[in-house]
Amino acid sequence: PIKALLFDLDGVIVDTAIFHYQAWRRMANSLGFDISEEFNEQLKGISRTESLDLILAQGGLTLSDEQKADLAARKNGWYLELVSQMTPADILPGVTDFFGQVKAARLKTALGSVSKNARLILERIGMLDDFDAIIDGTKIARGKPDPEVFLKGAAELGVQPAESVVFEDAVAGIEAAKRGGMRVVGIGDPAVLTKADRVVASLAELSLDEVLIF
Ligand code: BG6
Ligand code: MG
Image (cartoon, rainbow, N blue to C red; front, side, top):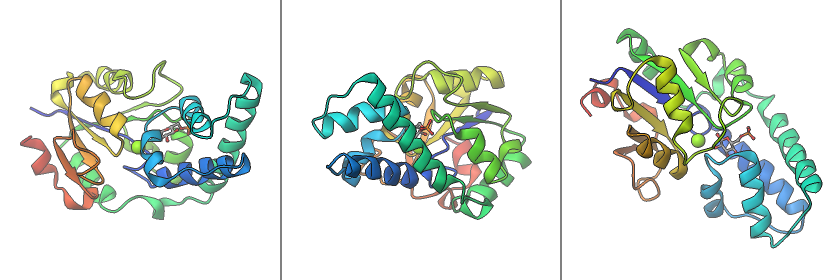
């Protein structure tokens, strides 16, 4: 039986995936090139430093570690400007209702995010207390598609991977869940998230009952 649900943050609970893209794009533009929305799909679920490396390669730039640290900090500053405007109204459609069903069914929940800003965002939207465990970018050594973030979440909740379902908007995150031996619901476009067990446009399309019979 399913005992626990593990949620990605950016693009699943809130639409910060767009803020990441805007901030990276601003950085790329400042360096004289652009990044497309299609390219951005690869950045979802990937750590800040890995994202920067992919973007610089895309722009054909090789920079020193110091320059890279400076750019990553600048991007994060722009990103946090956008995050600072967030309120509970930014919670994505269906999330609050779905969590109501999850609590009523007494299932456990964990956050599984590569972001180092995860707690800050949960605070801003008033969801810090909605998770029994929070695994974020400060607690892991490897980003998605490595399964570490989800395996740590399941371990902290005291459940087996096979008793867990992951909710993910990223190709790398779906791969992480699969490598971890978990079932996974993709949030987004079925043509992009081809490896998910089920894909919905948002949690508003899904009832908990449908997840429990997975
Ligand atoms: C993930 C996002 O949740 O967190 C990535 O999908 C992002 O796009 C990563 O790069 C790291 O986030 P942060 O907030 O630590 O820069
Ligand atoms: Mg995401």
